[in-house]
Each structure stands twice: as structure tokens, then as C-alpha cells.
Image 1 (cartoon, rainbow, N blue to C red):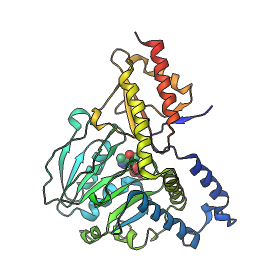
Image 2: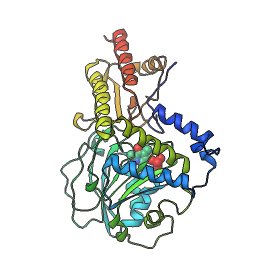
Image 3: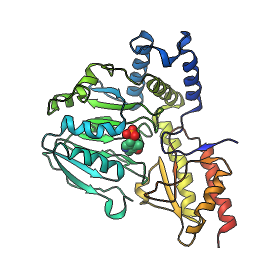
Image 4: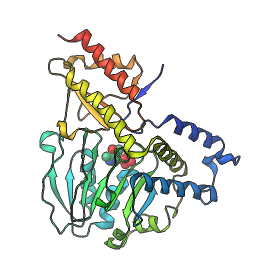
Length: 357
Ligand SMILES: *Cc1c(COP(=O)(O)O)cnc(C)c1O
């Protein structure tokens, strides 16, 4: 049976990407060698890095004074590396959920952290807005998409201090203005690649703001100056990332993927709002395009396990909500076809027809 994969991460990648990844594992560039066994210091892999860089820049309109680099270790490694590099006196953080909290916890090891705004008072069901940003911050950190709760910033913040954003779960899902950010980073396993590679886009002048002497691998200068090649980079995940960027360009880039993502989200949120058995969990204006959370309507809570079984029988995978929210979470990343959302929506309709009172 065809599977409809709504996994939150690692998540679905385009079919074309699976195919070229599989081919490269067997024979990379018709070299007779697997991509898993090549040296990262070869012309062939240099070409992969260069193409990834060029595609990233083209798709996201990244100016020349920004550098892109890759590390292992996940977004979670940047949670401590960002304050290690940049937190001298005081940093500002916005707390919009689990990932923000983890970033805040690490930052506190290095200096003063001011939480400028939080949505914890209502279980992270909205994006705080209109908060003041002190001018003396080393940087302001935000999480643009809250993978667990299903909220997302729909506009780039405009602030005077360096803005650093965790975009693990909505990178390249919509057009953004890179120049509003001093640094953008994320684990690539949601929208770009298999697990194992972590991307960062950093404005060059930030390297002059590194506030302390750091272990070589922790300093961002190391990775930028060595083109992500100070040590062995995650060769295969970077290759797959490059293939995903190629796919994204081939379908029409960010305008097209944004159109598709809105279409899928409108379809599913529309059904959540219309269907008497379900309800959404977050403020409508802050709803995520990527992680769509919903629960059983009051009075129907006991039907949740039955609905899970119902969807499973139609090939739907990965919609169990995070334990902190409960209910359901359909992650609709770039590669998820509209058809999968249609199957889920049909499930909801058919289930309601059987159970609505
Ligand atoms: C998944 C996720 C993370 C964690 O990423 P790792 O690469 O596993 O460290 C951090 N932030 C957000 C927003 C995420 O969705």
C-alpha cells in the first residue's frame, strides 16, 4: 500500500532525491565508487559543495557577505555554540516552545539571558508580538517554526540587534529576507536532507563579534574559513541536501514551494475547522504551514485511538501528536505531496460521517 509519510523529522524527501541518493550510494558520478567511500577532499566532492552553495544562494537570495557552512551535531549543537561565540554580556531570547527553551538553557551557561517574550502562559499556542528589544543585546534568538506546537512566524522580524534564527523546520518552505538575519541555522533532517548535517548561514561580520577564545571546533570562524572542511563533513547528507536543493529549483523555487505549502495547509486547516470531530490547537494567525496540530473536539476525545487506526489502514504514517500536545500532528514539509493531505482529509470526512452525533 502507498504510504503517506507525515513524520515530524527525519522526514519525507522527494522521490527524485531518494533515487539519486540510491544511485550515488552504488556508484557516485560514474566513478565506480560509492559516495559513502569517497574522500571529502576530492574534486568530485568539491563540486558537490560548490553546487550546494550556489543553489542555496540562488533559492534563498543569500547575499555575498553571508557564508554557508555545515557541521554535524544538529541544531542542538548550535544551541550552545551560538552563545559560546556571541554571548558576552546579554542576549535576548523569545520562548515559543521546547526548542526555544533548550536554546535558552544552553545560553544561560555563557551570560545573561533576557527572555523578551514567551507564549508559555497559553501552552505555546501563539507567537508573541510587539515586544521591546533592548538595544544593548549581543543578539536576539528566535525559533521561526515551532515543530512541536505548530506555530510559525509569518513575517521576518525587523530588529536593530543581530537576529539569529533556528529555522530547522521551515527552512526553504517560504521566501524570507535573509538580510534581516545575522545567522540562520538548523538541522537539515526536516526539509532538506537525512539526519546528520546541520546548516548555518552567517553574516561575515559576525565572525568579528566572537567574544571569547574557543575550542577550535566550537568557533564559527573555523568552519567558515575552512569551508566546512576543517574536519570530515557529513559527506552523504550534504550530497542529499544538494539533490534536494536541485529538486526545489527544478519545481520553480521558493515561490512555487510556498504556493504548494499554503495549498496543502489550507486544505488541512480548512477540514479541521469544518469537521465537527476535530479542532485546531493554536491561534489561527500563527498556524504553522509545516506542522499542523489538531485534537478531537470536546466530547469526542475517546475516539482518538480509533481515528489513529482508521488513518493507519489507509497508509497514513506519523500523525501521532507530540506527547506535550497530544492529539495529532501532520507534518507537511516541502516534499509531502498534496495527494497525501487529500487522503488525510478524506479520512477525517469519512470518520466524521461514521461518528458525528
Ligand atoms: C528538530 C528541531 C531541533 C533539533 O534539531 P537536532 O538537529 O536534532 O539537534 C531544533 N529546533 C527545531 C525548531 C527543530 O524542529
